[in-house]
Image (cartoon, rainbow, N blue to C red; front, side, top):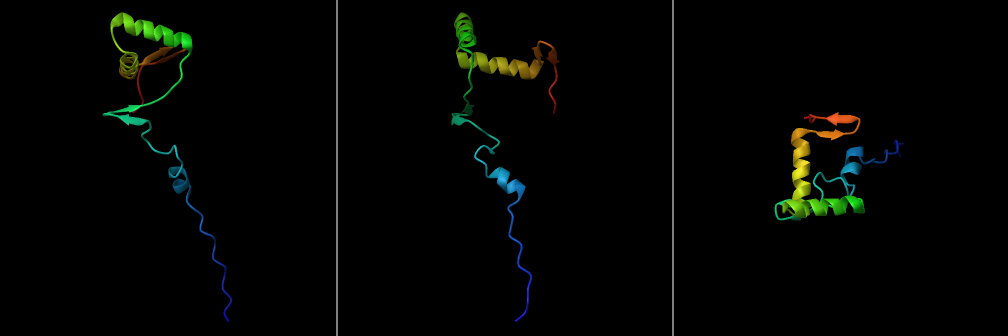
Length: 89
C-alpha cells in the first residue's frame, strides 16, 4: 500500500464568495417599466419642503428628485466645504 499526501481542501475563491452575496449584483432596485425603483430615507422636514416645491412647480416628487440628480451629475454638486464640479470617469 502506497503512502499518499492528503489532498488539500478546496477553498472557494474570494471572487466567488463576493459574487454569491445577496447584494453583489451591479443593478439594484425593483424594475418598474424601464426604470429601477429604489428606497431611501429623508428627514421629514426635507420631505415636506420637497413636496411643497414639487407642487409649486407642478411636477411629481419623483420627477423633481430625478431632475435634481441629473443636474448634479451633469453640473457638479456644491456642498459646504466641498465643491465637486467634475465626475471621475
